[in-house]
Length: 342
Image (cartoon, rainbow, N blue to C red; front, side, top):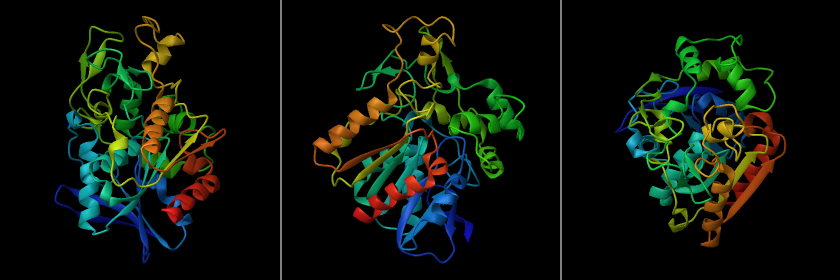
């Protein structure tokens, strides 16, 4: 049975889900943006009994203490929270699994503390060069101030409905609508608990989406210094030297080929939306090309492999942003193979 527990660390009080009585090698499952550890419950129950799955809520999500997010540190507020949680529970080297924004969190923890990572699994992860505002496989900025990334890219109607706890799907911006059109490639048959988890997201300038600044470059805004979306802006979050990590645990990268969030043609990237005419005033590909998110991740992992690391990429045809929910058997097979082989 999955139970929620509160653990007070030297940084904050963390809520985490675990299976009562389960022991074995710890597998720490880190959720993405606008979600919580609930998105891992089905994976937790499916894991073999030799593993101990734990799904903490990040700050500002679920029932974890909602401390503000200092975006100038990139994703380090989250990765250091996770580090303090691992140390408080004396878990030792752990298997880390990170989905979406959680993929960036576990990448940051690997970069800073590789000795604590037994294996790393990335599930449709945010690019090592953040979200929005870059081009090329090496993550070059489209504008020096990171224009096109950060909190200004959030849809105000989505933020409003999230804040108000909207449960329905009448609006395309309602959390339930976004879940079924963006988080997955086909609507989920049972989604109430996932929508409820999304609605635990704290909103505002300290949380989701964060503060924003005006920019002289298109589309007229750049990242601020507070909140979740700014913590993934390329001016704040960049991991461009993953190959220097020692020791190098094995990495599994599993992704859905129909992902519309993390993609080389992301429907959440303002530059790509401008290119297809969905956002007016786009200055053109020479000035503001779309971010090749998948290609950037592949390039970083290729360098890691070239430096002696083991990397496996699994592309699940037709799956969207949440492979663990959409193709649970394929996801579990790849994950367990990585855990067993670490």
